[in-house]
Image (cartoon, rainbow, N blue to C red; front, side):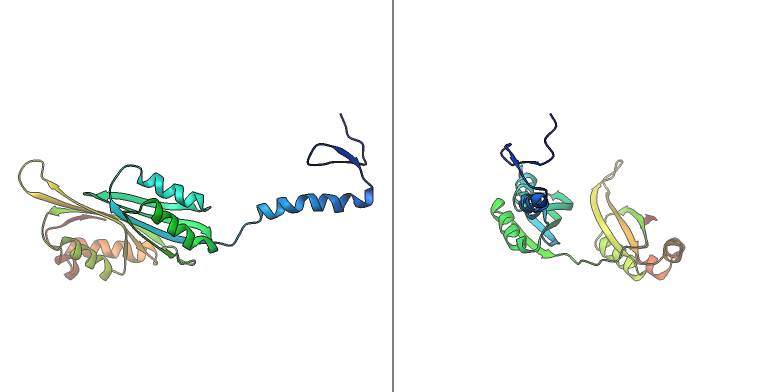
Length: 215
């Protein structure tokens, strides 16, 4: 049923006659609590890292502690190497909640090492990204040689993964590396020259002699 024009519905559902001149004032007062609840605090980003023994429920415990302090996980990466679990998260939270959030995560996983630091607000986006896959017979110093070559080309590596496994037909151990190369320059200025120098056997490429690379 339509309400009379000069009635105001209160929070308890009762109707009270009001004057037109008081309508805006009462409506404003009624909305003030809602406005204070929806007002967002200044937010900033925090990088949280967790390292320790692997066990079930770790991710659940960590993310629950973050959520209880109004934190939002924007990006995360987790993996296990042998018995060790490692997790890194980019968390968005109130600037005044960083210490409490970090302490809460540490309390949630007391047997693990927890560290946190504020993320840089302005990070220049790369102009391009290219996948890098390397495979060869296993040997000492391969990761150092490949990463040195990439660094000498003015590139950086992101999401680097390496592993060693037995060859399918023999006792040789095979090494493989995969990652993403990033650069602030355009791809036609850095990717193609880098690929050519690797393949034609430049000084940097000879340092990783015997490595088959696909750029």
